[in-house]
Image 1 (spheres, rainbow, N blue to C red):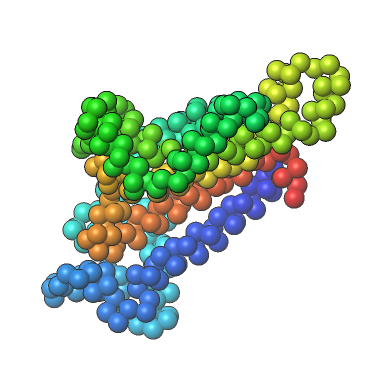
Image 2 (spheres, rainbow, N blue to C red):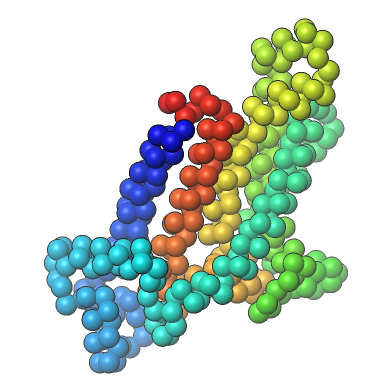
Amino acid sequence: MFRYILRRLLQMVLAFLGTTLIVYALMFAGQGDPIQALAGERPVTAAQRAYLTEKYHLDATGIGGFFYRYFDYVKSLLQGDLGQSLTGRQIGDILQQAWPVTVKLALIALAVAVIFGVTAGVIAGIRRAGIFDNSTLVLTLLVLGIPTIVLAPLAQYFLGVKWQLFPPTAGAEPDFYALLLPGIVLGSLSLATALRLTRTSVAENLRADYVRTARSKGLLKRRIVSVHVLRNSLIPVVTFLGVELGNLMSGAIITEGVFNIPGVGFNLFRGIRTEDGPLVVGIVSVLVVVYLVSNLLVDVLYAVLDPRIRYE
């Protein structure tokens, strides 16, 4: 198991360097004026130009200068220094305020996917081709066909404004109830995918040879499903949900924007809209780390559920 985790950690380092290099290159490489690329369309004063030149070592030119600046940026990241946005605020302070909100939102969305998606998927897989199974397949197909950019405003209007079941916007310091509707919207696609994945996995395992062997031994159906089928069926589901947690924390831009939630996605969207280069690069770099860590945890859980994986 130790060698398995070590191998995954080495892969994580390579993935981190590769992704951060691409993100950094998009901001600096191939730009005629990297300072103007950082500032976007806004005019740059002489003082700002001098500050950005010194901070990002833009006086070093050529491919060597680019890699020097990149490794200096990675060095600052490893020391916990994310730099400053063009507004003068520390990016670390911005993320420190935004992370708790985004984590709460992502956990609510993941809980919705697990509680309703996995549970309904198990029932649909056991009662395959029944009324419940066919109904859930139609509903999940409908949910998967509606993008978040459409679903979020509809939920906000009907459930928040017209029927007033939830607050229409979260506000500066949202509580659990204010985040519940955005969490349901954010987790709806994950719920639909988890349901269909669980249903397919359970249905396939129920037709496996080991299930027929267990039935021939006289084991109760409840024991066969709970002890044997679920463990094997949840392997792809755990993989999906683990990766999805990283996606939920990094992909909540639309949901946080619609419901005015001051989270990571909201700040990333604001950085893109205002063309705040350092803020965008800093947030994306941290999201890369979050995504890689979530994938590592998924790999470890995968190896625990299926010991054959760790020996591959």
